[in-house]
Length: 129
Ligand code: HEC
Image (cartoon, rainbow, N blue to C red; front, side):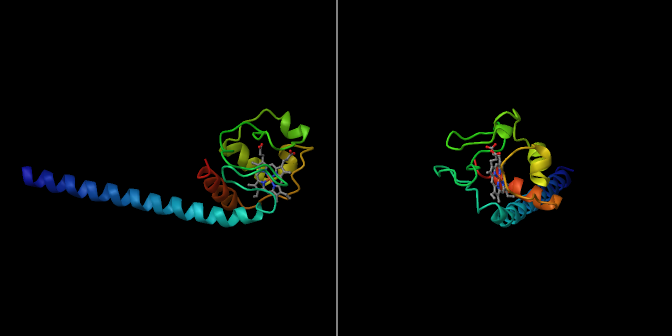
């Protein structure tokens, strides 16, 4: 009886850890895809600590930050006064159609029409903190 429950526990452990491995792989793949999507942003954005903002603000630690999160960037009034937090949801809307989400902003970018691209780039930005 003891032996049976030992193997049952062992089997449970193996299933649990391989599930975790699969989840980690999926996350890693999403982040990798997001790094490729971020190539569309690199003309204007960097996303590493200790870098100056360029044509667009540095996106280091932007996830969970308030809009206009950088001191070294001259934001439009639209973004300065938006008073929002860059949650996954707000980022998703912003990246789908920046102009529609905050009219009058100066991010000259058409947006990412594919939901999977937005998801991936958000996962990538989450690693930048
Ligand atoms: C042509 C240049 C350009 C491209 C390409 C671009 N952006 Fe931007 N981005 C800007 C500018 C400029 C702003 C500031 C907008 C303002 O102040 O109105 C901005 C603002 C942002 C902000 C708000 C940051 C804050 O501090 O509030 C986020 C988030 C962002 N961009 C993400 C992205 C992502 C992700 C991509 C690629 C999918 C991208 N941008 C592509 C120029 C660009």
